[in-house]
Image (cartoon, rainbow, N blue to C red; front, side, top):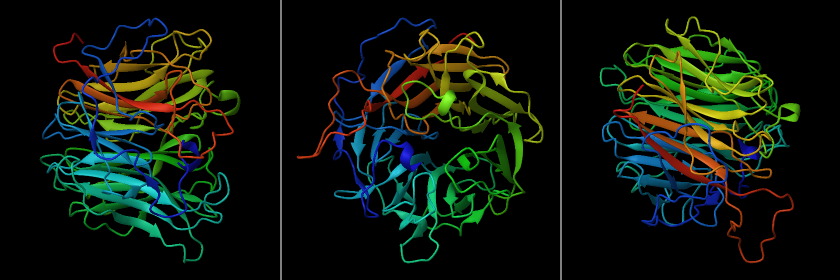
Length: 477
C-alpha cells in the first residue's frame, strides 16, 4: 500500500524504472552475512539463504512463486519492478525487467504460475494519490495491471490493465494492493483460471474488487465487488485490507481479508463467476501495529491474513498476527467444514506467552503434495530488548494442530525506522519450502543515488530482500 512502501512513485503512469537491466546474480551466492546473536531454535534442515537485491538498492514487499509442473522454476519480485527468476531451485537468480528494455512498472507486486507454466506478474501504478491515508481524496490516474511471461520470467508480453483510471474521469477512485493467483488443480473444472483481487478506495468507503481471466491473462472480466460490507475510506483499522485467496481441488475459491476487528471470507463455487455474501469468520486484533502496539525499529507492521488448504483432506487454514497477548504473536485457525466453522486461535510461535518479544509479519503455505503446513515470521525471542530480529519457519505435520519452530536465518538484524513493507511471501512443494522476506541491510550498506540527489531527511535503514530455502524431505516430523 502506498505510504507503507520505501519507494516514492514518479508523476507518470509508467512509474518506477527497474533497478537493473537483465543480469545474472554473482555465482558466489548464496551470500552469508555475519551472525550477530545466537539463536535458541534448531536450524531448518537444508537451510540456504540467497540475497537477491542488487547492491545499492533498497527493496521490500517481496513475492515468490513456484511452477508446480516444473518445481525447479522459482520467481521472486519486490516493490518497484525488481524481478528475478531461477531454474535451479532458488540457488541462483537472473534479474529481469518485466516491462522490457526502458520499460517501467509499479508496486505492491504479486506473482503466480498457471497450469501451463506461464508466469504472471501483477502490480499497481499511480501518478498522484489523495491526502495521506485518505487515498480516494483527490486521486489521479492509477490502476492495477497484469503481465505474462510464457517462459518462467525470461521474456514478457505487454501489460494488461485490469482496472485503470486515466485522470480525466470524475470521482476517481484508487486501486490498491492487488493479489493474483491461479487454479492449478488437475481435476478442477476451472483449471487455468486466473483470479485477481484488490482494494478500491473511494471518498465514502473501501471495497474489495475482483476479476478473473479464462484466457491466460489476455482479457479480464469486469471488476465486481465481493465485500458485502464496505470498510471505511481511510487506510486504517476500519478499512478492507490484505486480500488473498486460494483454490480447492474442485475449483472452489476462498478469499479472505481483514475488515476492522475480524477476518472476512468470501466463497465462489462456480469458478469465480459469482460469490456468496462475504461474512466474518474470525475475531482478531487490529491488523496494524502502531502506537502502543508498535514494533520497535520498524516503520509499520501488519497482521494481514493468509488462507490455504490441504488438497487431500480439504482442511482450510487461516493465519494472522495480532497483539491480544500484549506482545505480537502469530496465530492459526482451522476449518474442516469448508469455512462454515473455525477453531479457536492457536499460537504458532512457541516461545513463552507474554514474554514481551514480538513475532510478526507472518506468511503461510501448505505443501500441495503432503499437506504439511508452514508459517514463516519475524522473531525476536532471543533478544530481551525486543529489537534484534531473525526469521523463524514453523512446520506442522499433523494438520495444523501442533507446530515445531526452526531458525531460518544466517544473522539477526535491527533497523531504525526500517520499512519492511506490508508483507512477505512463501511457497512449498513436495517437502521443499521457499520463503522471501525483507530485512534491514547490514551496517555500512550504501544506497545508489542519482547525481545531486539529497539524502532523505528522515533516517531509515535500507532493506534488502532475501530468499530462504529449507528441505524437509526425509526430515523427522
